[in-house]
Length: 288
Ligand SMILES: [Zn+2]
Image 1: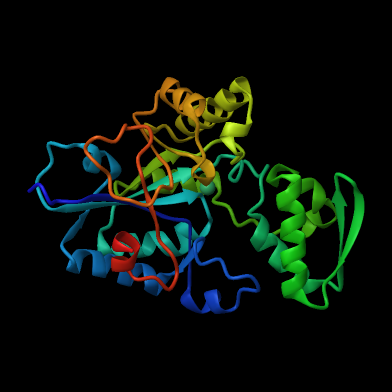
Image 2: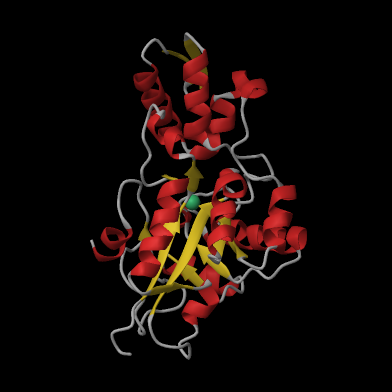
């Protein structure tokens, strides 16, 4: 009983396996293939892990045996298209941490939109904070890398402005509120908070930090009418002030990206979490 492990695993996007090979800039920590997800679940169970919801994982009165909670961050549209069908088929409970800027369409899944744009253009005109800038796209991999870096350096919240010339062409890679309603109604899935705009929370002043955390939770609860009890720190980043704001917002627990097992002594608002990675089997994820 004492050697029973508890672990939380983080995923983001789930796409058909062949789409992974077609990426200009591979994002193994951001997307898994559907077959990989299936194998991951199968291997976890074969190794003796029960997959449980996050609340059940945190309930220490639970029965013995290894317990694993599966979580998805951000709110990619493919959660509805590709992840949920697998979860339903295999009866896997999951928590979806939603950044509300995506369904509200004030945020972009930047690297995916950039891939689309550099594939379809000879050059991109960017409206950077330092003025207009042109990036040639004859080498799409190089172009995508450059544009991602420019946006990353200017801050992700500037992406809609920087790519503003192409507003009409953006494909939405985020879940819609309609899809979120359906997901929230599914007894297998639980909705968690992940801020309004996915910022580096420790870099914000306390008011802005609280607004990101409270506003997101309020929006999810009001819009979806479900309890929102768990939070995931964007980029895993937190500080004492941030943790306090999460606690004050009413969250029962919060997860980071520190890759290790949950320990009985862990504070509920800084729980560790492993990152699933494309090409990395389950055993390597939780034992590597
Ligand atoms: Zn995130």
